[in-house]
Structures are given as C-alpha cells and as structure tokens.
Amino acid sequence: MKEYKEEEYILLSGIQHFLFCRRQWALAYIENQWEDNVKTIQGEIMHKRAHDAGIREKRGDILTVRGLRIQSAKLGVSGECDVVEFHKDENGVMLHGEEGKWLPYPVEYKRGTVKEGPYDEAQLCGQAMCLEEMLCCEIGEGALFYGENQRRHKVIFTDELRETVRFAINEMHQIYDRGSTPKVKPKKGCYACSLKNRCLPSLMKEQSAIEYMKQSLRGDED
Ligand code: SF4
Image (cartoon, rainbow, N blue to C red; front, side, top):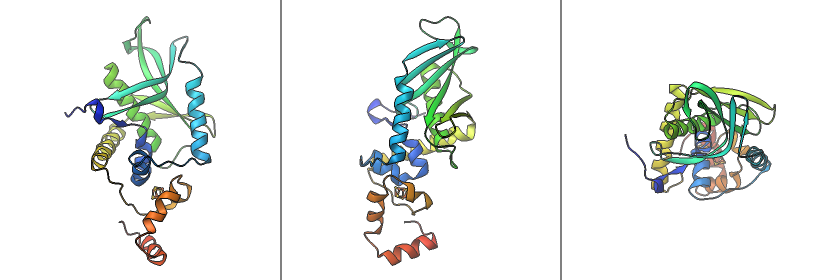
C-alpha cells in the first residue's frame, strides 16, 4: 500500500467540505479562499471551547485529551482531534504514564445538528483511522457532539464509512496535485454556503443568467 511523505499530507478536516461540495473544498483548501459567515464563526467558537478546556484530564476510567495532533501516512492526511477519550479497556493500548490499557474514542464538536450526508461521520472516521495507525489499535466507534441539541450522536466506523473516507481522500489528493478547482452543478446547499459569493459569480461568468438557470433546471453537470 502507498505511503505518503509528510510534505504530501493534506488536511483531514477538508473531507467534510469535499463530501458536501468538492468545489467548496478546492476553493477553501487549494485557493485559500474562505469567508466567515455566522455558521463558520459559531463552529470556530465551539472548537475553541473544546480545545480550551484543558489538555488532559482523568475521571475514573476515562482519560480525556484535547487538541491531539493526528496524521496518517497511508491516507496522507494530518489534523487535530477536538477530543479523544481513552476508555480503560483490555483491548486497548498502553499509554505513557498511565496504568492499564486504554481504547481511543474520538469526539468531534459540531454546531447545528445531524446532517443528511455522512460529512461529519467521515471526518470523525478519518480521525479514528489516523489514531489506529498511530497507536496500532482498532477503534469501533466515536461520537459527534452537536451544539444545537447539546447531545452526542454515536458513530460506528463501518467498512462502508471507512471506504468512503479512503475514496474521498484519494480524490482530494488527485485534485490537489492537479491544483485545479472543479466545477460542479449548483445545488440547494449553495444558499447557505459561505463561499457562494466567490463561487457562483465564477460559475456564471461564461454563460448568461438565463442559460445558467436553464442548465440548473435540466440538472446538467459542468
Ligand atoms: S456555492 Fe454551491 S457550488 Fe459553490 S462552493 Fe458553495 S456549495 Fe459548492
């Protein structure tokens, strides 16, 4: 299996954007264009809170580590986990300075609520796959914590979800290497996209507004 060099790593956090819209991901992560809107600012505040609360704390059989740096040579990604809980478990791994064995359980903080697509699940699964490679263990599940209902949503890392992660990251690498921002068909989610002001004018630049509307109604892909 191919292993990436560190200088080839891309950011794992981009996978949620890529699965939602590959053009959004490319604008943000290849072209470095990003516009804050209320949603992205709320998301940043949630992540800051998750990271600010402390680096490492232990309560009973759960050791909580915040802001843990992660990477995977197999996937060619790097990133940071909001929270990784280590649950005391015979199937876990030894940790420096701790007695017994501990099984990682990643927890990612998100604003809003559960989404229709597997965007957040794929990001969390990617974190688990990095942790598995770094710590030589198997992680079966983790959780997404949504700000709107203040609840945890359990995520099982199925073979299908892992394959989604591998496939998406492989495509991200290919597009990143080409350095070209893909064109995509406008969709419902465009209205809430923080990059619509940068993206849609360029989509419409080469065609009239009428043609653009006709194409959208036909559902044509660029
Ligand atoms: S406006 Fe729509 S097509 Fe453009 S980046 Fe955002 S989601 Fe993608």
